[in-house]
Length: 486
Image (cartoon, rainbow, N blue to C red; front, top):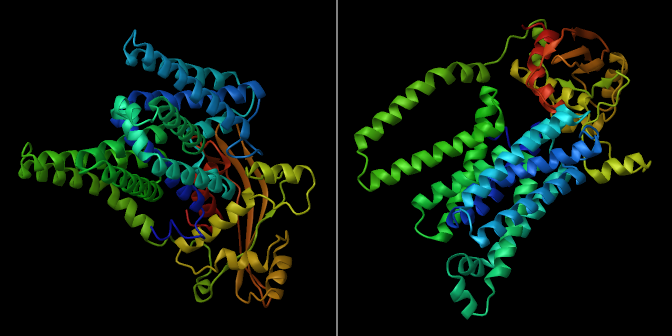
């Protein structure tokens, strides 16, 4: 877990962004559960996804090279979410049909619309599908600031109007006698729920949003002695479930979102069994047998994966002498003729397009390859100089290994340095990554080339939807070929 939260870790923004969404949904979920609006929590994330898909279809736009989350996509998400919420609330107030009818119809319509809009979009379908599923791996610092501002605003509003929300939810007539209009506070509560869902779907996807709207709240309300404790327990369970699910996904190479929801579901089941045990409805022996059986079934499947993740990989053709000195992984050169730039904030992208000389460049595929190379070297038992230290003294890439080593020596790096030159990086329609990456290890002081390697074989990445996921899936086999340790 300390590795996951380290500033050097490649997925730090994904963890912080997903954690923010989980905490936001866990607070909103308490009110959804208490007001018996769980089915609305099912339909609204799907309506939000349909709004995103509609915007991309109307604009013919994919998210490659644009902001993440996009302004237009966020607008479509907000419009669709609040439109669906308005229809559901209006239908409930009329009361001519059960509320479940409208929610079911909305969910079915939104699901069909999402799939149709994706199919009709002439371009950007892979990127858009990734956005709908949740772009945790593409969260930028700007996205984190927006999410932090939303969390601060929601937390402040819930704290300031907590009594009004409770009165309007459970005793609207008494609220009127105190001079508090329940309709006004219902509207504010719905605005918070709709806005939180719209933003959460953009960042984490509909599944994660719905899972954390419902499961932590249900678990907390089973064991909490009061409403205040329920909010605290729900937030703690959401944080534990997301961090635990992300760690599990990282170790076992699983999707982060579904893994986090699965951990949240396990927490809900565990607290439910504990509640029944305290009430005397389930014997301690039966509960112990279930727990032991589950542990034995899971332990045998994950033990091998955990041993592989914790044990150093074979070094392949890398020289044994490298173990004596830390290796500095220099910035990789991009010789593909393509920018291969990852989505950044809307303001930064617009500033670069307008020629602002002070606009900070966004991360590229070469930057992620540099970070992945450092991880793969550490997995092989080698010491690596922190990337922040290397990038501070050698910020620019050199195409020739000796020129890169010379720049490293002038910057004060006196050990071996790893250089990389990306010649090709193409994703085919058949789910193959065509890559050509040349690597070289050079002694910075003597300018002696210690080792060379290359990765040139196609890598299958059928399940990847974004550049970040492509690198996540292809990184291990790519560097295994380059280092000769297949």
